[in-house]
Length: 368
Length: 195
Image (cartoon, rainbow over all chains, first blue to last red; front, side, top):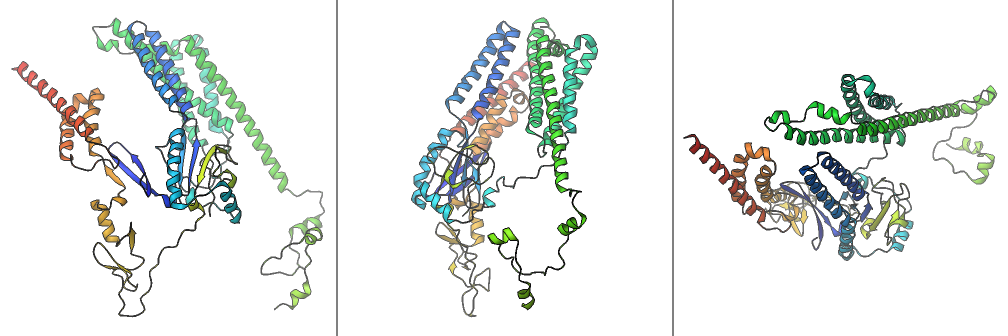
């Protein structure tokens, strides 16, 4: 903060870029609270749980190490909570609306605004809430400045219709994946070893493709959210298999094959051991099956609603067949007897609305 | 006047949501917002000076626009400037060329918009290979002397615009020197062992 401007410093690894906002130009400061603190805490809690599970699976000295890691994460979580809720702070001038990344916490943002306010008011004067109402009333037509919105300012983009074909393939694939998990015992270890990773990778790839494709589509929030949920769950699944299997196997193998470091590396069998573990199969299979079925039902509902809306739109455009042909022609055709009027359209009064506009044809004929 | 837009949904906010003591709810998306507006929002933006056309032949004209009347000399090079070319930077009148030169050589601090942080660079070169164990084996011999060179070469270079000391340079020099010493000891031991 300077005596005439606010300096926004954006720091990279070995460079800084600066933006100066002069107090006389600042039009508004907007603070919007976000759920980032809660989301980070959830992520930390998941990581902590994974570390504790890995520690318990390893046992011995490994448990102590992973408990220490969990405590470090717990400390980070406490610090994150103590810092308070997160927010996004924007600063608006006549030509831009810039986010202030350094004011990411609500407490800091409010403190900064409290410090900035007297400086800006010293430069511009004060404006009470009543003044805002009065000034807004004076401005007859309120228009949104295009520049002010230009930071992401596009007018709401038109959504493309998507039938949800790719999403349907994903949901069926996820259901198939769940079935493979549940029937692993029946189909045999080799078939399971081939089918499960194949299905998993295809589902992961499809969910990625779906998230890209659905961003500008008119699919319902339920379908989109299900796709995102599947993607996140598959990522957690993959992370759990690789991390837990890698960690557990690494420690176990190191004890067994002390003389041969190559043998101590996690083997494919170790990953399969985790992937076919009853707890893992139970959780993954159930979640995938439920999300696949829910996704398919949401998609079916969306398709049904879309078909209904299309039918309604089609019915609105269709002229009722019972109407007499002359009436239809009158409704469509421009009356040939009516004189053409150039210039501004006359305003309609209450009588005109009730009786229809009365055009003085004699006056019109006399006009040059 | 233009309306304030919600930063979440980009829809204009109603005037009764502005300058309220607590948080208010966006009328379009329902998100919580605190909007503090200032008089500049309701102020007309003044139009820029266009430059007046010279009518009499003897009149002083702009160096860059011979048909425009000169209004002020450049404080950097002394050239006559019209209203269009006159750049008022904190009360200092400069021509576009002088302004560009001033930004390039870093004389106009008010217009400086980027700076390289050599102290952070040196520290990164010294620390990262230590944290990432694999590069210390392969690149430590390269990054440590580099960190030392950057620290000494740019010791007097301006660091961040925000006040901070030379502590990064000092840590970088110490770490780089330690790494170099370790490398020298390793090489000497290896040579002795081989011979």
